[in-house]
Amino acid sequence: MLTGRVAIVTGSTSGIGLSFASALAAEGADLLINGFGDRSEIDAFRRELEAEHGINTVYHGADLTKPDEIADMIETANNDLGRVDILVHNAGVQHTDRVEDFPPEKWDTLIGVHLSAAFHTARLTLPQMKQRGWGRIIFTSSAHGLVASVNKAGYVAAKHGMLGLCKVIALETAGTGVTCVSICPGWVRTPLVERQIEAVAAERGVSIEEAARELLVKQPSRQFVDPADLGQLLIFLCSSAAAQITGTSISMDGG
Image (cartoon, rainbow, N blue to C red; front, side):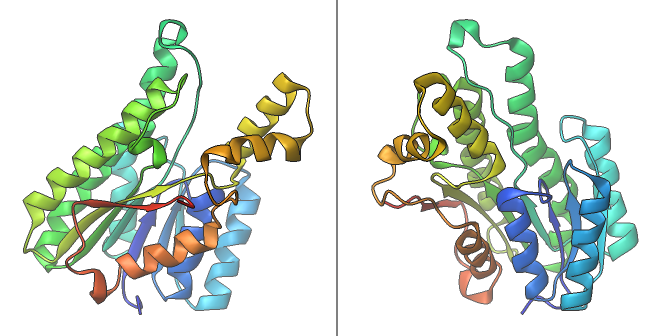
């Protein structure tokens, strides 16, 4: 369905982003992969996608707290892949502390990676999308973009902010063929969440699986969201059937 399209997926070397990249590749989209990790493993993932789906991929290790590196990433996609049709801003980090104990540098990092990077990637890709009359901007927000939890001031503030930015972009692009949607997953067993599970296990003196079950108390289904299902939601949002779905958030959180 997406043959001939070019997508950027930030934070696509692991977790949800990796599933997003895999889903887009399976539909024929060329990809710019972004994120941190072992370069040999990243290159192996790229080669696997290229061989299996006949697509082109490039990698850019932009630090998303640095606007100049974001600009270079977008330029690389334009130069090496020819364009950007689909922007998926998915990269994420986490830190937990009470507001009065929250280190300012951690706050700056969370706002930078989640919210400021959403703004910079969007502002740099919107002109070409509007010029061509087609584009998809997808933000990975969170259930925490809709509700709050204690000790997550930076994450909650950034994810709420993404929803507001999404609405503004949708209004400014209404009728142009460009859409902007925020996906709000609940608990997904990614490396980021795995570290939270480990922290709960250590704090409570329980097993990893018991700690995981404790986290799922807030998810009525008592099941983790499957990253592959999020990938299929992304593909739907890139389809013609989703042409009038814009400026909104879609939850996948087990109730």
